[in-house]
Image 1 (cartoon, rainbow, N blue to C red):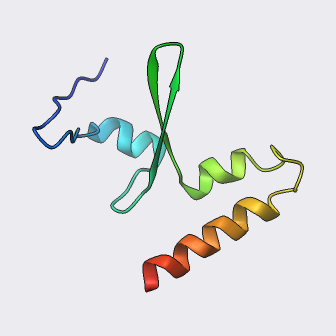
Image 2 (image 1 turned 120 degrees about the horizontal axis):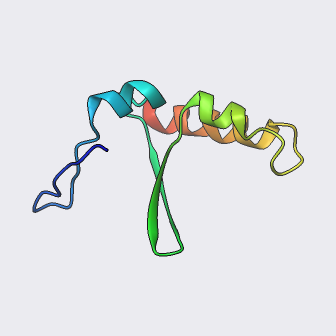
Length: 76
């Protein structure tokens, strides 16, 4: 089990072991979901997106379009 402390700004350090395992790098966006009284953190990496291709029946087109839009936003 990995443990971290919440700062006064509400920030949490994700342990290095978990960052490596899930491909979380500087700038990786994290999606938060709440389910059955638990907080779930999902890194929005290329790998995560590729695993979820087909979820909406668009064969990944929608997800890749979203990723491209996010890249454009970063460049602005």
